Image (cartoon, rainbow, N blue to C red; front, side):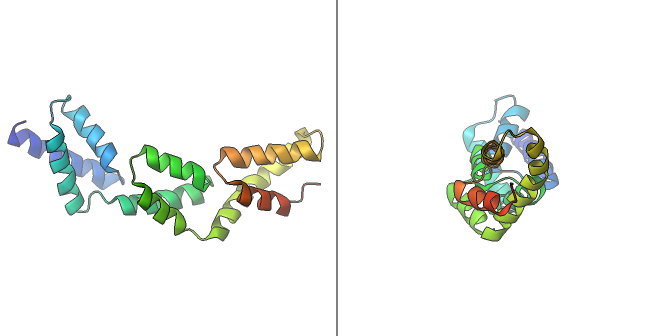
Length: 160
């Protein structure tokens, strides 16, 4: 690919990553799209390396912010967040580090906030206490929480 075209892609990628945090994988996919597949893998790597050196791409920062945002805003659990970060191409070590940075109590609090409104709604629909508990377990499981967290939170909620 020509030097001018590469420089233009670098500028475009810089703008793309300056608005929102992006991973190397996301930027690579965009570069391929923008170049109509004409860019070489080595050229993609060169652009990514330059963006990393200028801190436009920082996957550790991305993982930390992603985990914090998904927990606080959407009340997602660690299993679902881990899966989403893996899909975005974040290395496992950075995912683990970002998830470990969250205090254990924050996971409990987030799930409790998520399940509390559901409890009132499910109480009217549930046939019995077991059915209500299973609905809450299902909601927590779909949100990506492990059993040790959701079992304790559900036990804390006043089901009966």
